[in-house]
Image (tube, rainbow, N blue to C red; front, top):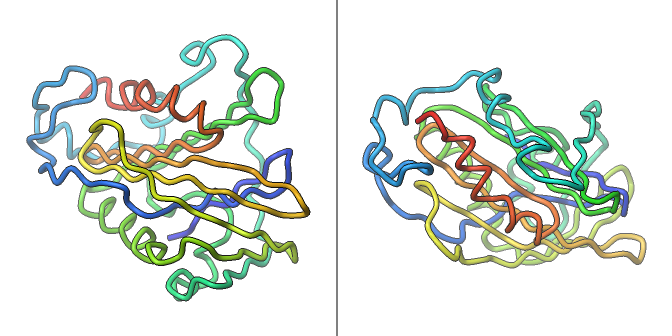
Length: 228
């Protein structure tokens, strides 16, 4: 499973998945659905969704409001990446810090810019069995638990990373993780918030400008889980 490295107009931003901020501990077949707040049918919540179904559940410009523009998907870059100062993350192997999507079989993603600025928000949806999603994400998060600071060297460019665990302000889904990342390279710093939510067989990842993540996280989950 790979850690996602995003490139922005401000330079390379290591939007790396992070340490769990909280876990509700609720069993998948008894958790309330994001839209109704009522217990959802166990079969619906554990059914694996296709990539096509996930694509339809992504936010679009009409959901986000004025000022947002979806960016076209670019080919995945595979620059040589080395992690320095985080042995647990390094032990995951070279692919752990290369760009691209997580390696769950069903996925969809979108990137939006806001008001023509450098502010961006990334949404990614994945689907697999609840156990596989939880265990897979947990491997990366656990590896990064003891690494509040480390360095990523991507394509020969050193990027200093500082991570801060965040506590969820309210419960969403079955499991939730969140962190604030500051990446510094070439004398410039970029701050990225990243929150992951598992809801049954659905995994939502929202990252980017902290204000935009806070603004759209819940509506992203509501739309992703709308028919469940």
